[in-house]
Image 1 (cartoon, rainbow, N blue to C red):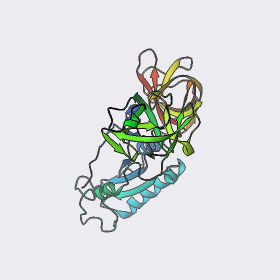
Image 2 (cartoon, rainbow, N blue to C red):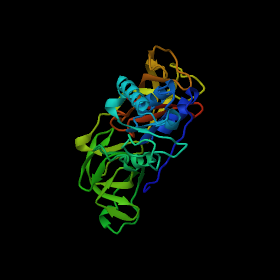
Image 3 (cartoon, rainbow, N blue to C red):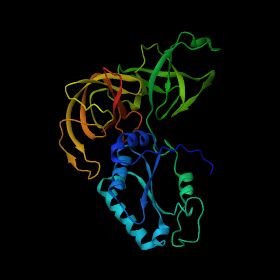
Image 4 (cartoon, rainbow, N blue to C red):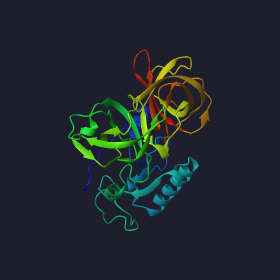
Length: 340
């Protein structure tokens, strides 16, 4: 193979739902393993729902242990059909790229090498699928989102014009930016243009997703950590209420009477729970009314915020659509949220 992979292997049992949500939240591809003798199980459905919830764009359904059913094509086809039917019910099929592969991990069949046991399968091996899956951020033209981490004066620059300007340091969470682009700084809505982009000692003409850069603006704008720089024609309205799916991570149940801290990109706000609309039974996928959340529960709820946040829906932007919930008294992370 030509790529390097980061593999997150999380336990699959229900009491480890929080581990799986955390591991899957940054993933670009999920391999859902199905035992060819057993077909689509409750665990398959639970894992697929979680993969859908955290927005993993590529799903590979690996039907393993084909050697134990004598490499029977009809059984394999039925498992694929069952899975597609379930995926359509939860909206996974429409939203994701799903591929199927029959394999025998024990014999190494269809992982890297193509043995003679399944001449009826002419698709890619597992490694070929992994090598060809698009890398993160390549598929959609994402809007430019730059949460400010730190405000600094530029280092002694060879360009004398830069001495009076503040530099805004941060990581480009999505999209790209070029010198001369019109930008808006949120939540205040100040407008300016990009004067320069610095990466270390180098001056760049443009920068894109995942680069950590210093941006200098034409105008002296009062900006601090937690503000967000966006392109003026891609601006979003700061909000003081968010609706989200939250996976509860803490052994202490959620309390609707308490104040929590929501941390979103580089910004924080105190938050109260508005309403818990329902929690999801991760095995049956039923929506159930509830007054509280315990560890590993996943629910749809609203937060009322003290400070405005600049958010996108998680579906359109996994960086600016995600947040964590922090317990004020212990500073522990107690929830992981995905904005609807």
